[in-house]
Image 1: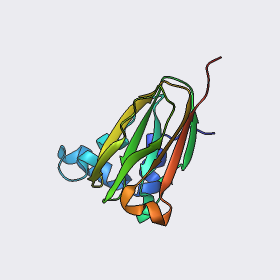
Image 2 (image 1 turned 90 degrees about the horizontal axis):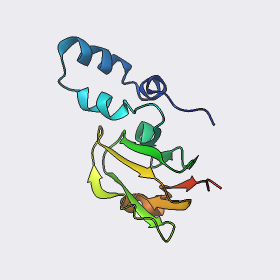
Image 3 (image 1 turned 45 degrees about the horizontal axis):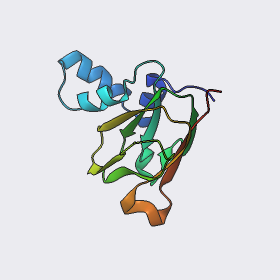
Image 4 (image 1 turned 60 degrees about the vertical axis):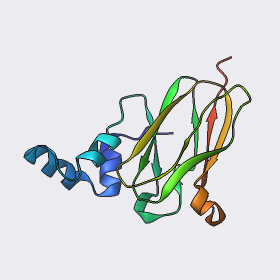
Length: 136
C-alpha cells in the first residue's frame, strides 16, 4: 500500500490553493485544514467524509504496532466511534460530531482489528477498520 503524502491529500481535497493563500497571508481561513492534513512522516491518514461522501478513506488500513493514525475531517457532521477492538486496547475514538478541519490522532499499539463507525451514518454504511499486525 502506498503511503499518502500531504500533497496527495491536498490535491484530493482541493486544499492546495487554500494552503498557498494561508501561507502568504499568515493564516486565517483554511489554516486549520492545512494543519490537520500535515501529518508527520510515518503517520497514516484516514480521511473522514472525503468529497462529501459518507465514508472513510481508506475504509480499511493495516499498520504495524506503534503506528500513529490521524483521522482528518474533510466534511462535517461525522465522528469515529469504536465498535470493536482487541481486549487489551483502550482506544476511545472520537464520539463528538466534528466539522471540516478537525483531526483526531491515536497510536495503535495492541495487535488485532479495530472496527469503527460514524454513528449518525451507520445505516448508510459509514464504517472502517484498522488492523494492527502482530510484531511476532
